[in-house]
Length: 127
Length: 127
DNA sequence: TGGATATATGAAGAGTTCTGCAGATGTGCA
DNA sequence: TGCACATCTGCAGAACTCTTCATATATCCA
Image (cartoon, rainbow over all chains, first blue to last red; front, side, top):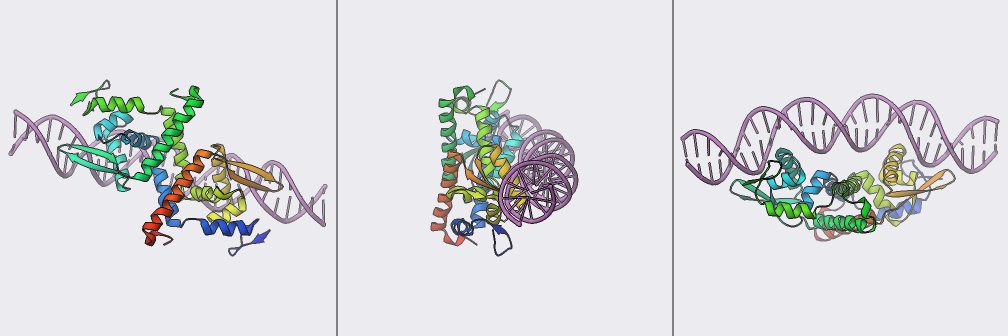
């Protein structure tokens, strides 16, 4: 067992060094974790999946997710702050749409994965 | 403006119906959100990125992430409970590895995205 | 202009999450 | 067997998150 510069025990210092060399910077990790975190809430996730097909207004999003309109608006504000969605205002309505290609990719992948899982294990679906 | 079965205003009832028809079930949404949620913590994310190249023991993971060994162990326990990682015990050491192909895909995609973003905006990197 | 509608916002409370601490478990070696 | 080491676990406090409620803003229409 060896010690590193901070006096921590290491089993495989070479692997640790090579992993550290490949590791994205703290800021990249934080940004990426932020994105995953936004997708990590079932209601926000449902909002975003709803937007995969195109823009929807706040009240329709509220109806789809089962959230109150206030909660929907708060959620959308957060997503807007992170530039995951964008708004188009038309009269009294606000139409939200997905505005992040990376997030769209992650959502597509996730939805495809649940469909694939359902194809193998249909009993798990829509319980 | 129309009202749906629960007396909620709807702007575009047809779109709402078609989105609802495509929407994965609540359970699938919850499971998917769980996975994203696990990736949504920067320390856990760093743990998992470290494991992309192969297994590592708890103390090496602690050194890489800068977490205490206790916090590392707690995080790994959570990941283990969700079958995202698996353990191999060798004497006193516990070696963890990624054990979920879907999570690996998400991680690869995310790392590739940060590298791509860095290529376009190098000033954002490793600040 | 005034009232109704659609959305946005701030504050506060309930609930959840993460970490450190202390102690438990299990392994290896003298 | 007894001690050191590596990891695990329950608990409790701190920090964060999400929702609701009340209110604000902005738009449309009469």
